[in-house]
Length: 114
Length: 113
Image (cartoon, rainbow over all chains, first blue to last red):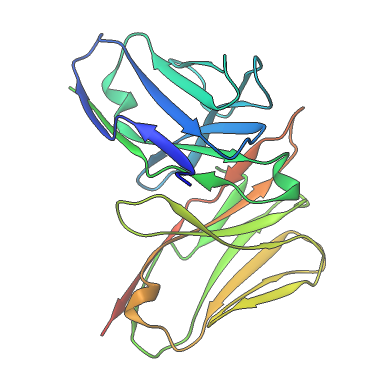
């Protein structure tokens, strides 16, 4: 049982380049989330999805887009990367709403924007 | 998230000592979760508290949620090097429509052998 898998785990981009982070979960979870983690800021919610075909903005959505075309996948896109987007990105999923259970996290994707 | 404040930001303790980490919100929490993150890795769920006054324990870690459901504490008894890592509290704040799960700023714990 793989749980939540993120790819790639590491990536270096130049300012203005685009990229997509892929999150895949094999637990048939309805809810999926993308967070970024920065020193002193904790984890901040970027976007989330409550089901296939749905997405919603979180705390810090600017500069990111997401898609949930398939229930098991949640993609995070950066159309034009900026140095401020250098961070560690975590994907998470949960069975239903978070008040009914825990979040399961991927191992993180470290992105550096030069 | 500014909605959840954790203290202290970092903690260095000698092995065998007890310690407490606090998580405070200005709003009522619908569910409070504690996670642990080992350096360079993802987050691991520790426990969830939902009822005011609730207390849960797992091995040497005890978490409590106060009666007003606005503050939680995580207490580690007789700390060990394996307890080192970043501890984060998280909560379903229900600030806007939908289920948004927010985290505190984290507490970095170092245990000196």
